[in-house]
Picture 1: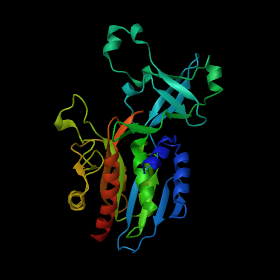
Picture 2: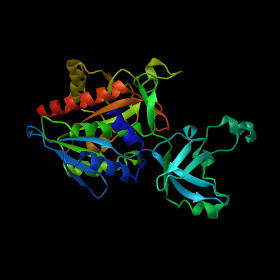
Picture 3: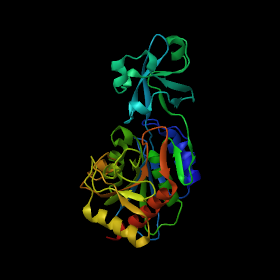
Picture 4: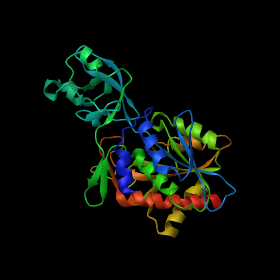
Length: 339
């Protein structure tokens, strides 16, 4: 699964340009499930299990990663952009980016600190302060390489970090994609639907149409979520902690989760010996926000891999947490179908 995650993270697929990840996933699960791609670009896969349950479950992960889209080019050949998804401008400056179309490399530039006024130095960076430099001499040369609307992502892939961690771009949510692929390739106790959705980072868009199409009774969203177990953050603000296992949510900014399902996930983790922790903050959101409101309503659970430096070029996760999420999702899919 680590190798699978590495191959997924090396693919460049920001919101609206998920085709490379979609093609990869379709090839990986070919012969293991019945698949179709809807008009939004979501993959909807049906995996036959040992039994057909009375309920229908949908297990979801999104394919897109945060990125950048070019909006204009100035006379000197520097590219202006907006972000695809929520990226803190402070983590963008000085970073290398890679264009999805052809692999062109750029660097995100900003006014040099020694030219900044005291007032400028005291202020946080804004997107308007940043630009992408692709080495062009002028606007004409830049536009011979990049078109308006072209997209880019942080340059990089995935590698080992310390003794038990992984670091790289796009772990949100290629970790979820890897877990779903692994499930589809295995024997399952029940029939299950799996959705690999688009444009989560732009407002849960693919999940809305996928859930309407599948019409599930219950769902599990497999994600990565912010871990703030870092220097200078109090224990009360850490949200979740690397190494403490799969992270389950009771509420975020888009969903209040079914209390019985939430409690069952904690009990199941304890029963199965799966490390499980609670997301100790009402923050962020994920595809649950659209899925749980679909049609007449869907009982939904969110299970996430704790991730430091989310939405950056250097996301960090613990390997064992990744496996714990996989184990808990498998166990909860079975439990939810038997309720």
